[in-house]
Image 1: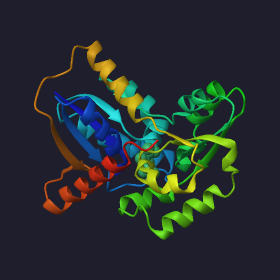
Image 2: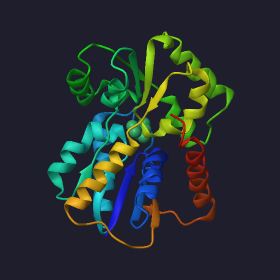
Image 3: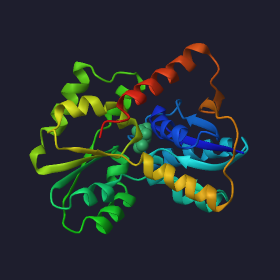
Image 4: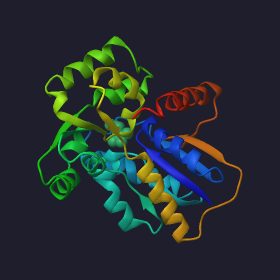
Length: 260
Ligand code: DGL
């Protein structure tokens, strides 16, 4: 059986990209909800509906686990999905704890989409892990649009980030949390704007570790040649131009993979 990765768009490829290295003998299905991206600026009800639709589709694809490679969808809908479906569902939330554990003294800047920043799940997370009140939150919705149109290093991206970061004294921060999977594509651009000591923290490795743990627990790991099927909102991606687009994202992820 296959492992599904689901995101509002191409951000989730960053989690799949890591899983491809860790699990070379698994078969993957990747679902990007390209008809409805971005999620982060929509209402919770809308997002819940989109996630439900995607899950209903994925459950017809013979999958043994679903990774919600989207912090926004996790924030809004993971609880409902777990109640509804009896397969392992691995969600993602901004890796604030991991960032605080790196240092524990300096501040931590958590970036995410507006829905994730405002969500109840974020409040619960911060109350639980940020005892010293070191965490600040910053929504960066435009990065999702930039990522979807493969605009990673333009002047517009740099200006946007510079403007958003200007509200913070970055010298006081030790870590920047990438709390949206679309933000991974901008690690090199962000690196240029950050003090050299700043760490980038994302949830990709932790999410894949949890996936492996859940599959092992069920004795559900395979030993097959790795394959990946891509879907845009329920349509199999088979056109050359679209497959090439996905290939460019994966190449970009190769480039930024080691930056931290
Ligand atoms: N990639 C998604 C996340 O991790 C959301 C992007 C969006 O659709 O706004 O939150």
